[in-house]
Amino acid sequence: MKLQEKLDALKAQSAAMMPPEAAAVARRATEELLRSGIAEGAKKVGDEAPAFELPDAHGTPVSSRDLVARGPLVLTFYRGNW
Image 1 (cartoon, rainbow, N blue to C red):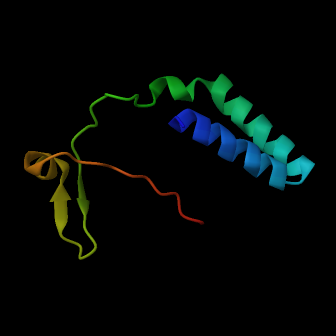
Image 2 (cartoon, rainbow, N blue to C red):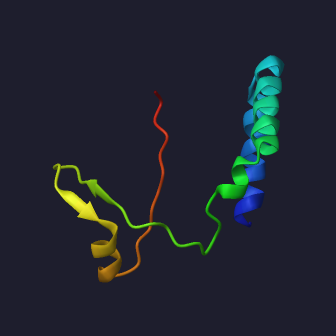
């Protein structure tokens, strides 16, 4: 199964579990985001990410350039529950 198919299935499953009012709010919010054009500026598959430096779990700065020099770098984004 392709990633988009998996995402579509998860989206349908989530919508089925929501109260109808909440599902309607989520649909409207998604439609508003799409109409805003914000997705046009999003990185696409194959785009190069800008270099960055962030602290690791111990507070030590880590450079993306240094990591890429050692091999492929995979970034994941986690939106916490805040």
